[in-house]
Length: 100
Image (cartoon, rainbow, N blue to C red; front, side):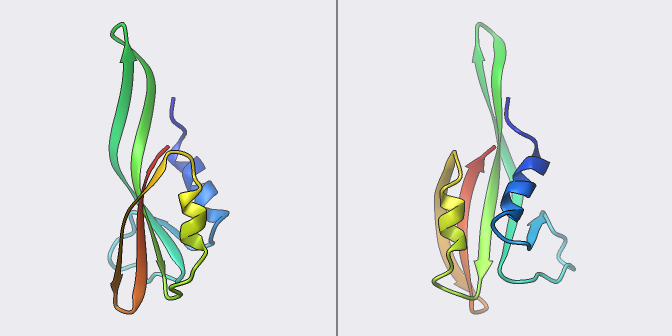
């Protein structure tokens, strides 16, 4: 079965100290940072039995540095795919989907 969200959080903290899970709007973010939220779940079944389950997370890297190495480290995570890039408020946003 998939791993726990706290394991994902610990893994992301190895990449940068500023990791937030579904932060409320009143939280002042420290950059660079990673924000992640649960998006979906995937279930794998055989013979009407659940044999594997993964939670899908949106993982967003926000950094002032357009050449940041943090997105490259996220891209190396297992079961990760790049979703999109955008800039807002002079910050670079790299968005990934990670099954964990």
